[in-house]
Length: 290
Image (cartoon, rainbow, N blue to C red; front, side, top):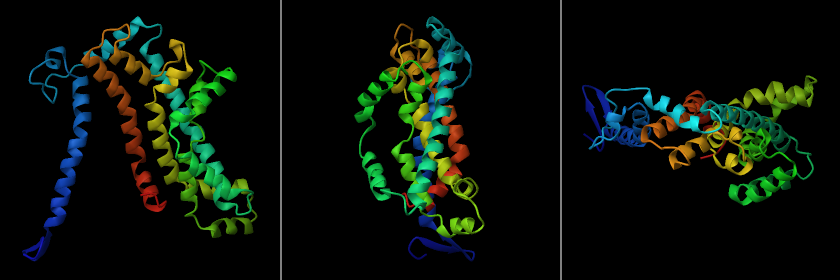
């Protein structure tokens, strides 16, 4: 045996690699434990919710907590499905518009060398990354209020569009695309819009998937926009409804009901991550973001 490597029957065994994988697997299971416990609690009957010591896994799964979730929210002015619908509409609009704006804005910043004030605009984008979102909440509220958009879907969508992180991500990925591809398109007589849609957008799929994932997580889990820009119950979103259940504002909060609501919150995020994870890894490998 030499160092952390040994030879057994002609095969070299890398003990350091095995130890690393075991160590990382243990930490991965440790990070997954809260999610697994939350999902298990969502399906626990009342008889298992208050056991001591508590059980990590559910023994007799039931859908009662999800039925209770609907019953709890019946005391409000709108059904629970309205919160889900609002979150789906707002999140989908934010993801789509953010991708369109980021890709179209990053294209001239990266590939149009003769664009006026190109470097100054990109420096302003980097400067915007240094400010916390809370810094712009009051100006955004004043703009939304003066435009008369309060209690509308646009009030929940507009503040999340044109995010600096999305534009920065797209620009950095576009810088890795060779300019000769665009020069070949120009030689073939393609216009700017044709080159953008036929050459740039297909090559941007990893970055688009990454931006879609980041934007989806931020928009789907954001309760503050609905809290700030809406005053009617019909415009509330799912994260705010979950906070209402956990806080007990006029309703009886239960552990199982809250776990069921949290489970409904996290399932879409997991699905989107599973769909986009391969593209996300490609973006991190090729865009220079560590």
